[in-house]
Amino acid sequence: MNEQFVKDITKAVQKTPIDQELPAGATPRRYEPECGVQKHNERIHKESGVVDIKGLPFSFRKPPKPIGRTAVVQCNKCGHITGGTTATIGVICKNCGEFSTVSEVTLDR
Image: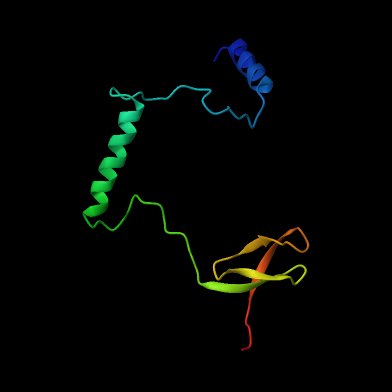
């Protein structure tokens, strides 16, 4: 290769910062659908709904959120007891005002 070309490339690479991030919408779409973006998205949603009905081993739907049963939970930082569900992992405690993990409390009746 031409030595001057290599020097120019090396100089350009050294000036380019690493870990750059582009803001959203800074570059145009790589593929612009003929019918327009809105109709394209509508067609995708319509066709994925049809595929969900056919009983395939996969789905295009969002995964179900764990609901859990109603339970009494305790803040692991200060011990404050509050209501929640068995799926509750953490809360902002009303007593200490900090985010904390919680554990289920069993009540003796």
